Length: 523
Length: 114
Image 1 (cartoon, chains in turn yellow, orange):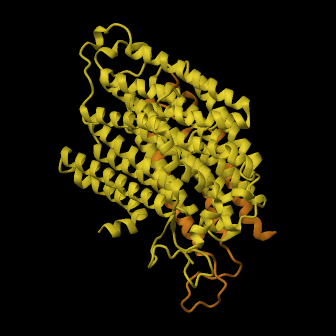
Image 2: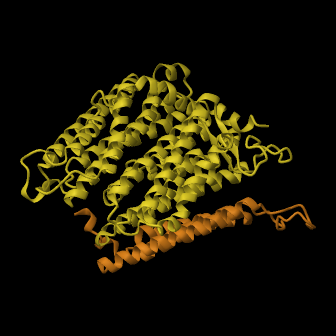
Image 3: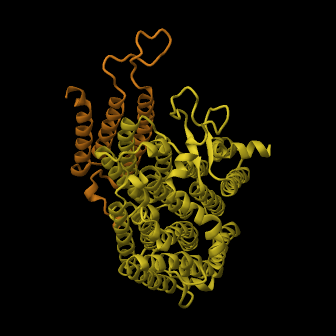
């Protein structure tokens, strides 16, 4: 049994939540308790499989899984002329790392939903879509096949859009969902166009095969531009960020926390294409600078748009755009020095580790912040900062979790945001002091913005209209508490996490030949 | 030259679709524009697998070994199915919006910004 799970972990990672999603309408007929048990069991099992897979990858190197082959490591059939013809999942350290925390956030958000959506109708569809969104994210980060990547991208977009529209709310959230669904589909089609261009030239959809044959022709440049535009749109980077504030603010809180991870899967796709598919053949200095400029724009525009917002979730959504800029900045610096081994060792590697570390940190503290905002909305019925106040008297735990999340996003020690931001500051300073200063200023503005929000929501005398507001139910507190605990633990022990998980992930991106060898090594 | 015509047509379809999306204000027409972009991408995919004089890729009793590429056809079929799902979902969103707002004009969608 255990051997079976270990041998088929990449397939089970997709199959378990998909089975869970399609069985939900049946399980849901049994009532609320069986449905809650089912959804929590499915997401927990998925998270355990992801953890097992990550452990396998970190101890034994990348895992190759070939669908439909007699042996899962048999990527290239003897009579195929050296072309892998089956769908192949290539799970290296970067994929395993993304899959692990995506599955974890999936479990946490479902746990939160059990309490926060307990009074809503249509729960079968809601949880089925949550599981399908999880399938989309896990598929995107584990697949080694470009067309397969596109299919999971579409699953991700459709499930995400339907979830944003879940609470119709006089049509406003449907408007946000239409925007999100429309732009995601357009992004998906751009990616597919690029895949068509690549397939026409290299006769393969496998990323490793394309990487080994990449000659960087004019058509490849067009494909690269389409891929960057499509995936940056999916990741919500400025200037393609306009769907993020609407979708993030209108979706139910648990969905928003999960959508953050869905966007990061787009970011993962961008990094995978840049490093593993194009790699050194790329004009990496120019493209690296383009990624850095995207990052700096996201940081600055995101935070300046966040400051005047009055809707608490909209404000947090702009901060999410701003934080994704740090990830692009860190990895972009790594891309610029990709061909320069000395600079890579001096600061490039640290910058990439900082950027990748920030991805998981962001998923933790931003998820936490969105969940606290959802808790406040659930108990007060408003998201408007001007109408809130004095909630610190009645929602003490939520206040504590909000403080942890806010200090982490502002990069205050000892929380995890500080650890990754420090790595980014130090390495980027060696690269370009001006950009490092901009990054620090953005952090200060983030802190200022969250101090204001904290004051508006929790401080002041208890207001009569919120006199009967009580703390949220326990599953929501447990979900928020788990994220808060990780936010603190990852801030106290950053070195251990970086050396065990983050550094292998950064190496997996930098070392393109190892990625290619994973597929061809099975000959 | 003549063998490149499908690629040009694919490009033109995509551009027409994008122009429709940017210039039209009716949401249903914008979704139609998206469907045009999708048709262009499908045409590009199918065109890359075409061989002049090729037969269907079924090996049993095949009259010749010049066969069209089946992979891109499978990809196109997949994308058609995905496209139907996407279009249906987006059109259902448009239905809800036009019921709640009483309009399908994007320039009158101001509720989110307030």
